[in-house]
Amino acid sequence: MPTQSAPIDFLPIALMFIVALGFVVTTMFVTHLLGPKRKSKIKEDVFECGIESQGNARIPFSIKYFLVAILFVLFDVEVIFMYPWAVNFKELGLLGFIEMLTFVGFLLVGFYYIIKKGALKWE
Image (cartoon, rainbow, N blue to C red; front, side, top):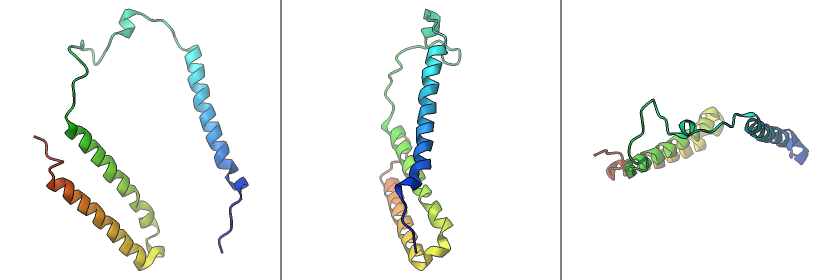
């Protein structure tokens, strides 16, 4: 029989978040105070790989680049959902297996759709 969790059970997690947030804020504040503050024209110039910058840096990218990036993130997150299923494969039984097949089926339908639409073709 599962037991109920009391709010006090989550105190270590809350403390961990508070300590982590405090560390980040303190580190940013201290480095801002102690860091060098010497500004010059040379330090504020754009520098990349030792090559002088030329032209406008605001050149528009193809939407295909962003589409592939979003699709990568989408399918990467979908794979993350498979790990708990793989860990609990035996406990989930046949129903869990059917649910996972349905999930993978939806994934494959989506993948087939983006291939048919030509979303991954670079021209």
